[in-house]
Length: 376
Ligand SMILES: *Cc1c(COP(=O)(O)O)cnc(C)c1O
Image 1: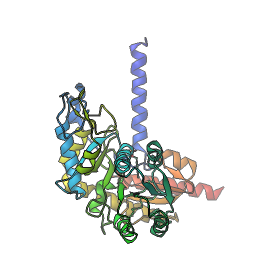
Image 2: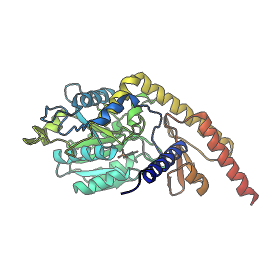
Image 3: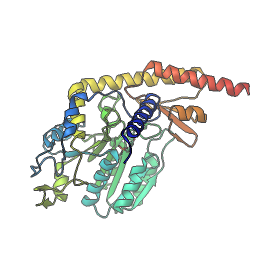
Image 4: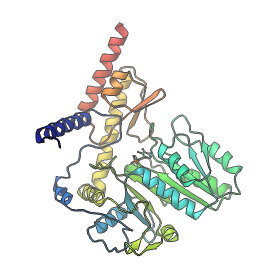
């Protein structure tokens, strides 16, 4: 067994590393400005939300009631039919996407999935796991799905039910696919058997505040929407939410007597603390607070874009996006600021915790680097 001081040292070192890493990142869509200390007491309990949050279960150390409130909050925000919605708190956007695709496949077992080349890697993996045939659709330069290519491709497969994967906020450029345009293409081609899943992992939580609005929600035609809980809202552990229709869930539910509930979720045991964090956050902020967070992020993104343009960096943003797309940065900058990079493109994501000072520090670094490079 290790001595207590060795353990203590390891612990301190780890804490120091995590803290430092947290304080200098601009490249990943994770909010860091939360304070859940009021909830620490709950860490003493083996909370497990196993089973369907909308059904009673035999295991009582759970937060199902809170989880239902979280689901209801987002169902309202995404304009779901108040008499026909369902969902649960997942382990993250990836699981939420898996669930959306799972329901879609159960509804239409012979369907084809269409997703754009800017789609998050979790979608490809999920499609593989579910073994659904799929076709990749071209993306436009701004990262949005190419509607013409989608229409052309659908035309050749009109005899098959269609599952369309739209993204509200792509990973690199935060592009948003227009669900209404997709819906209209389906209508024009008379493909009645269809399902639209919207991946809003990053931007879904602030989608209702984006102006001008980009169609994405249930009234616009989505059948399920996925978000991440640890991204825009912020949480000490990864989490997500999936919202869909109750009538869809009913088709796939199977009663399990061991847990005295319905086995409608992907995993059996489920994190019962995550719903608490999300519930706490949305209750403290409310819709108004969420909007404020978005307004702040948007302002910072505009500022960041402007300052980068001033020093000759070709920065740009999609409309309403909090992600500033930039050319690939030198390794030193990339590592220090933890900038996700794909090909020649990188980005700064102005999450709600990003301040003007932070952006100024970053700009200073970039400027310095440019200056050193030019001198050499
Ligand atoms: C982050 C992200 C995901 C995956 O979400 P996790 O919470 O990391 O599992 C899926 N899609 C998009 C567009 C994302 O930004």
